[in-house]
Image 1 (cartoon, one colour):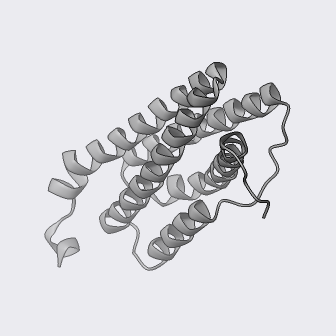
Image 2 (tube, rainbow, N blue to C red):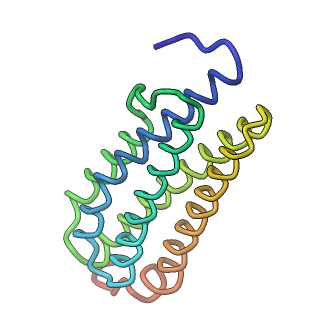
Length: 169
């Protein structure tokens, strides 16, 4: 691990962390799609996979614009969130309870990404990297939207009416 001496170096480090997180998520989302039994949830994950590939592309644009490498350490936070999701998926049966596990896991991922993109965008703004800040903001908005979609699925059905009595106890 390299020593970070200033905000610009921290900004670049955060970009690399986000890139690693998004690459890991691109690999994990197909499993989430496959494990969701609720059609709306499955569609939300499939849509977010497409969006996430766009997030990777935007980050690659930022790396190119700055003339920096995207290579860095693996994002430990995303690795942990995905590992936890896989553990919970493996110990639930397919259906409503697994869908609830998927929603909880997806919300955790989105909240991590919202925090990371928000901080990185703020660094870009302070550093005067307006083009990068705009690209990061677009992704930040999409992450917020994804979180809202997942929460709406949960509160509009799966958590309130979708889980039958047998699944609750």
